[in-house]
Every structure is written in structure tokens, then in C-alpha cells.
Length: 143
View 1 (tube, rainbow, N blue to C red):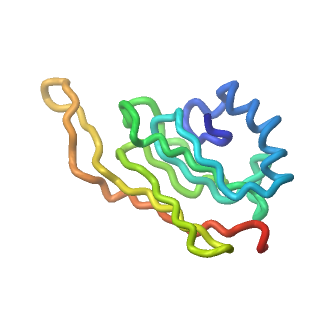
View 2 (cartoon, rainbow, N blue to C red; view 1 turned 60 degrees about the vertical axis):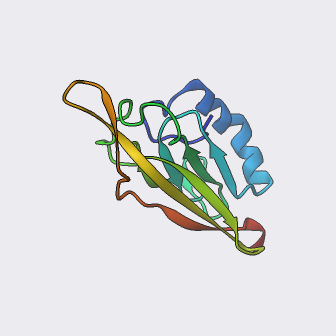
């Protein structure tokens, strides 16, 4: 379950519990990245702690784009919170995390396609979208 969520479930009980009890431990022990699923969409935050941008905060990633019915559940018309670096509910995919060296890791989302409702009301698979997200995550022990 994600600790940060920009989608409609952002006030989900499990998310609030993680923020209250687990996030302080992330901060205390300098956790660089937290990857969660559960939400069928994609989101990556800037380093964040206590809902505020913080260079020593954790980068949170929701990598739920391998899941079911991506583009049905979320309203992306609301502007993203300041801590949101990227979000999408329209493309299937997966992420890769490459440990570059002791100070940096590279996160990259790989798109595999999206779904659309056809004229007969059935879902059809479509080609890859132009959504792209990648970033270098800095190891907090070297800040």
C-alpha cells in the first residue's frame, strides 16, 4: 500500500497509517525509495516527508501499472500536490531500478501499452502512449 497517493484514494486508511507510523521510521533511517503497488496507476514523488518537500525525505513510487483497468478509477483533472513528480493512469508498464553507483540509482518507467473502450463497449489494447518518467535518486547517506 502506498504511503503517498495523488489519486482518489489519497485518504485511504492504510495510507494514513503508513504516514503516521512508518514514515517517521523511513526518515529516521534515511530510506531513499519506497515502491508500492495496490493502486492501479503510476506515481512518483519528489523526496517528501510529512507531506512537505524535503531533500532528506523518501521518494515514493506507486508501480501499479501492471494491474487491472488503469484508466477508469482516477480523476487527474485535479492539479497534483507539490510533492508529485509524475503521475499517470493511462498506460500499462513496469519500472526498472538501476543502481548506478553508491550515490545514485536510476528509476525508469517502461510503457507497454494502454486500454481503451471500443465502439462495442469492450476493452481493446492500444499501443504505447507518450508518457515517460525517469529520474536519478540520490542516496541520502551522501547528501
